[in-house]
Image 1 (tube, helix red, strand yellow):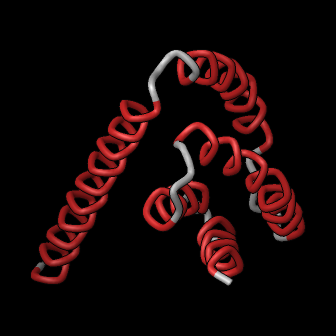
Image 2: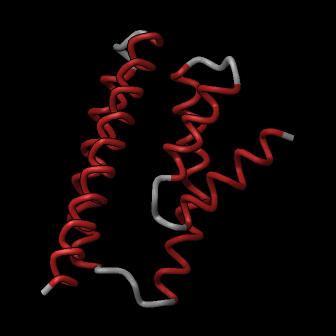
Length: 127
């Protein structure tokens, strides 16, 4: 049952473009005793059908910048190869720690961005 909930929650977040894989990794890390390498591999398989669905919907709604996408895809593949090779050289415990640090950095960045936007809107409204 929890796998169904993990899939639904991660799928919704993925469809919104906010990192469904990150949510899935977090949920699997917190609520299963799977090793981090296995969690990350499972996430990659999860990503294939969810991204195809999201791509289809975004193409249908004409929400894709194809020139930018090609450039990002090419370098994303290079990064995926390098990251995959690197992850197999890192111990499970360390990989889990690095992922946690990554999530904290993203969280702080999002909080900072939120407050920055809030302050800018407040200044605009006071003019």
